[in-house]
Image 1: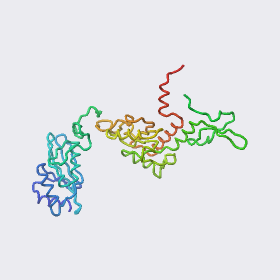
Image 2: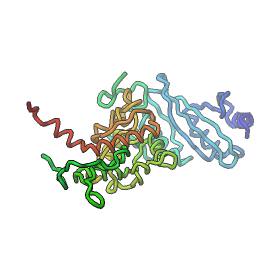
Image 3: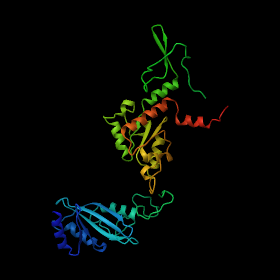
Image 4: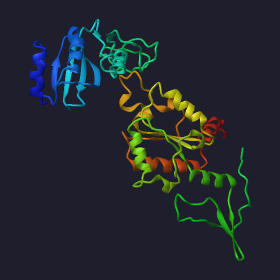
Length: 151
Length: 198
């Protein structure tokens, strides 16, 4: 499906969806509360069939965090990007690791480096950093006087 | 302490061997006798000469410098020409470790262990900005070791990000010259510690 066709199909399923255009892939913004339902539907919906989550990451915008999910369909070969704005002080979003297995480690990484809490994640531990590490290193306001030389 | 054992005391009529082959020159001289000649040399120098010309690197690369290192090993630049011959996958068989890439805090103990597992004499080349000082990751990074020499002692540093294969070859030849001159890290250290005599 082309981006236009995808957009029409997605509006059918989610009339409140907000789209961003101009990039290579169609970008959809969803509320964190709607994300779980959205994820389940685009995976199972006929003609959409997004069965592969190839990237899940987080962006720190200083005012808020954004979770970014890149999804593709191995049968239809179309791709979308889903963004979800999170509260920086209490970033919480439902896990999709039961929907796409790759999310399990991607979400652990986002938790490790940005401190995003994935609700109902089976094993939300730090991935790269040591278990006793304090803070979220990829946040813009992260301070570490021991390891970091500030410029 | 002088460890050098002279095989023969130098006689008056000696001519250097392969004097014209810079870099490959054998340490010693030929003492001509009827029907040929005798090579006169110091055993330590011969050992250093042999060592410097068969340095086997360890397969160790932590980031993009490793791509340049692979390129240096491959057909076009071919470090075998200088005696680097084969890269070994085990530190037990390697003589030189080329730190090709960023050393992060989690990698530092691994690098130390690999270095400890190498048999003496062993040498270290710090390839590129990251291994030398942390380079692009010197400021505002929580995870990078600011120079591999915080973990293990380094013999030769190369500038560049990443250095070209020519630069790596130059560093390797520099290491060979260092070995041939007999100036190992330990010897330099001992010389420095000696009290200054008038």
